[in-house]
Length: 190
Image (tube, rainbow, N blue to C red; front, side, top):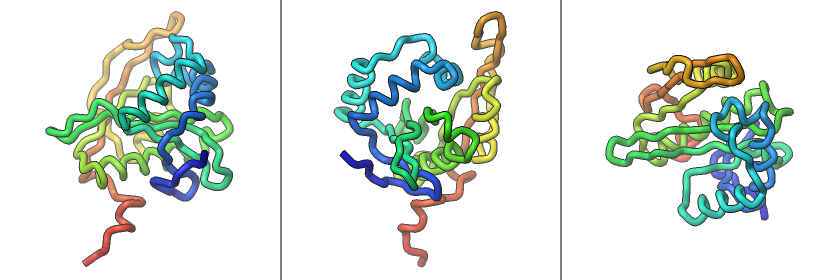
C-alpha cells in the first residue's frame, strides 16, 4: 500500500497514515529517546495491537493525522497531527514526532511542521495552532521558534523525570504570522 503525497516539501511529504504504520509507531513509542519528549507515551507500554487499534480509529473517524515520509526514499520517519479542534473559534493543538533517529537534526521536523501548518491554516482555515513542549526538549523548541511559534505560557515543574523537574511550555502561532509554503502554489494569483 503506497503513501500519498498530500503536502510536499523539499525533504519530506505528509501522507494519510496507513494501517502498516502501526508497527513503526509501536517501535517509536517504546524507545525512551523518542517517547520521553512527547509526554505520556513514555509511561504507557505500546503494543502492535494497541497501535493497530489507534490507526484503525484514526482512519474510521477521519482524524487529522499524517505520516511524515522521506521524499527521496519513501521511508516513514514520523507522524504529525492536529487535535482538540474547535471549529467555532478556529483553533487546534498540534503534535509531531520524528521517530527515526537518523533523521533528527536535519530539518525534517521543521519542514513537516510547516506543511502541517499550511494544511491547518490554508485548507482547514484555522486561525490559531497551539502546542506544548517540555523545557528539556531544546531541539523541538528551536524548531518551533524557527517556524514562528511564540511562547504564551509556562507551567513550572510540570514534568518530573527521576529527580529532575522541567517546565511545560505552551506556544502558539496565528494564521497571519504564517506564510504558505505549499498550498499557495495551487491558488491562482489574480
